[in-house]
Image 1: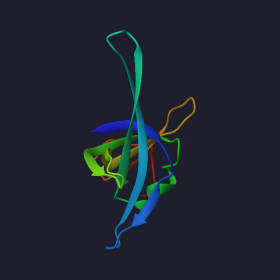
Image 2: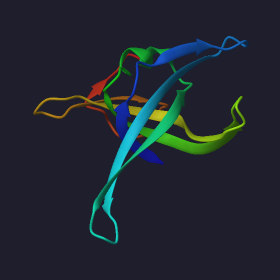
Image 3: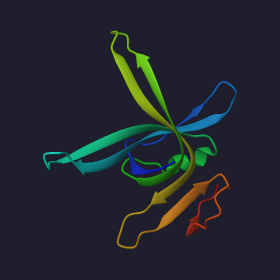
Image 4: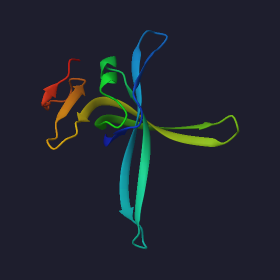
Length: 125
């Protein structure tokens, strides 16, 4: 699955008890459609993302960055301390493309090596 959205806050690296590192970040995607009455409805979906391949991507995953992610999505549900139920979406990311701003759109890519497309600029990881 691919999603394109903006990073909602700077990414963070967590080190787990087994010394593995994971980069956690959140992405917001926007969609719009017209309802039966013809009104335009804007919908934002938030994904909690995890990237396990290299912690070096933390430097490019800053708030507001436009990213294209490849991976798999899963849903989670939990009950809060007040008894209220909550739900969220997780996105286990295997490929990250950063879309840089400006008139000329450039793309840099972090990948697992399974993608055969050639990025315009390789990142050092």
